Image (cartoon, rainbow, N blue to C red):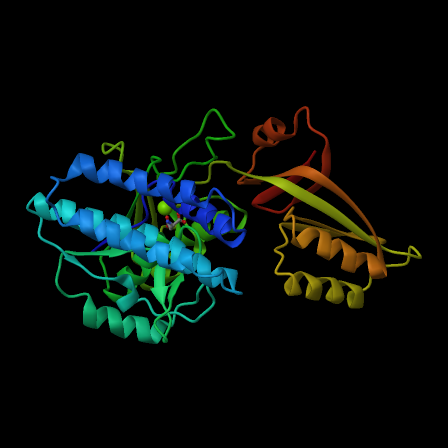
Amino acid sequence: VVVFSALGKVTNLLEELVELYVHKSPILDDKLNEIKQRHYNIIKELFPIENEIYNIVENLFIEIDWVLEEEPNANFSYDYDQIVSVGELLSSNIMSSFLKINNFANTLIDARDFIKTDNQHQNAIIDWDFTDISIKEKVVNYPVITQGFIGCTSENFTTTLGREGSDFTAAILAYSLNASNLTIWKDVDGVLNADPRFFNKTNLLDNISFTEAIELAFYGAKVIHPKTIQPLQKKGIPLQVRSFINLDNSGTLINNTKKSSKIPYFIVKENQVLISISDNDLSFIIEEHLSWIFSLMSKFNIRLNLMQNSAVSFSICIDNDKYKVPKLIKCLSKRFSVFYNTSLTLYTIRHYTDDSIKFITKDNEILLEQKSRNTVQFVIS
Ligand code: ASP
Ligand code: MG
């Protein structure tokens, strides 16, 4: 079974398209044409002019046209799913047809026939029982090609599983089909110990455990999403992360190993805000206050990247979301004194060493620091 994600950068372009659509932007058509052009350029290179793919691609774009002709829906996420899901439909159709003309017979199955979800658009939750049965029933004519990232509600509305959801789709399939292994093909060599956008020198991790992969993702590493790891971990299905560019490299193996790589692993989260909350009369921050603060976090769907309390204040480091953070600060200010610093960076080092700490903290002002046995975190301005 081969699961395809959208062509490179297409999901970002489609997201931009949805934004332009809901804001009724005059450059909506330009964006759509850019996306069309990207696909037509590729199919022109790959297919003779009489191939069926030209019609298929055109019809998929007509589906987008239909959405764009209507007034935007009150539910942004619903519109998002109807439009952004087309990226995967395009790429999987292109690949299936391309393989066919290269004498590689395959069955293209629409993932919406077996990935069944609730109606939480943009972040739909899998109905495992239904999905498991559907996969066993529908995914039979191998080799099968399908889309990642997309699913379908019981009322047949298209949903998406959250960004980078294609890996998750592959893991769901591996789980239900009792696959002997899953390989995720990427444009990087595998799981690196640091993001190459921030670090000149990075190392490839040969082998890490499922648990370590989940830990890394928790701190914000762009490794494999915990959602993807969980079904694989349940059945002990090994996951290989490999490069489709550098085929000589065997990449990173994620499995039940007891000997997970323990080299320092650096995770950078930019655009952080550090909020300090204290009682107006400088009294203790008591449990009742904390529970109110946490309930606000959950109400605004804010994830705490780091928290720390002292006698008189409670500090949280969160992503500086331009919608959520002002609302949160406004609410907090009703009951507490609130101070905050923006434009901060949160550095996390898993399996830290003295050198790795020096490397991160030299020349930087540290606003907050937290250390546990395996992990150290710094909020830096
Ligand atoms: N195309 C979707 C995204 O870019 C899903 C994926 O790539 O996994 O997020
Ligand atoms: Mg992708």
